[in-house]
Each structure stands twice: as C-alpha cells, then as structure tokens.
Image 1 (cartoon, rainbow, N blue to C red):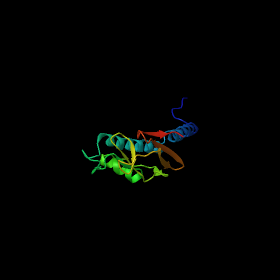
Image 2: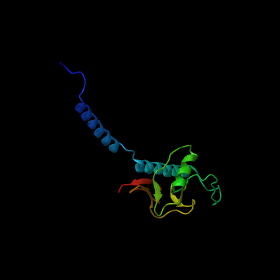
Image 3: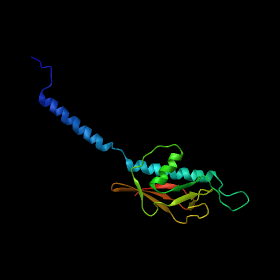
Image 4: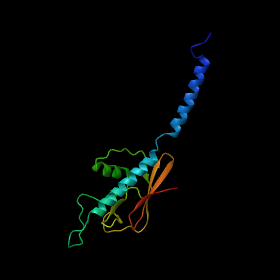
Length: 155
C-alpha cells in the first residue's frame, strides 16, 4: 500500500532545512546601511560642488561675494546633509552619524569647484576627511583641496 502523505520526521527535516536557508539568506542580504549612507553623503557633497561650479558667486565688477540661497555650500553633519537633500525634494533617513574633526564644518565650492572653508574666498589647502560611523564600523569620504573632488576612501 502506498502512502500519500509525508511523515512527521520528513516534515521536520524540511522545516529545519528551510530555516537554515532563511537564516543564511537574512544574514547575507541584510541592508548595507553604512555603505548606503556613505553613498548618499558623497552624492550630496558632489551636488553642492556642481551647484558651486554652476554659479559665479561674485558680483560683476567687484570682489564682493553674494549667495543668498547658499548654493554650493554644505554643512558636514547629519542635519546639514539632510536639510541639503530636502531642499531638492529627497526623502532619505540616514542611520550613520558623521563623526570626527570635520563634523560640523561648512564647506563651500567656488565657480572652479575648489573647496573653501565657510565661504567662497577661503580655499582649503589640505584634504578634508568626512567619517561616517554606524555601530562599530567607519567609512570615510575624502574631499581634495585643489579640485574639490570627493571620493570614498577604502580602508
């Protein structure tokens, strides 16, 4: 006589195998929050740089700097990055925190794309390192002084 159903042991064996596969999948495919936040901050820095390149910040015929909209500037902290992105209509929630010596610095980019400290007339002469921390891990973004170009620093 043929049986038409699974036995209890076969069912338990299948459930154990499915549980192992699910646990492995959950570990491997967990969200990469630090990586995503680092990419997001890098995008916002590059956006500020492109805004700075697009606008001549000096009044025609004088050395006076004007920038009523704050285009081309970014404050390197969580609130500054998020407020910069919200002006463009983006809705992103950062999980990582910006830490280190560059946290809170205001970086502006002039019409040549150069990174400047706080305004458009004080060029930065050394590399700016923006460090993001999530849990026990860190990732850094480096802003080069002459070009203003920003990249992710791989440890």
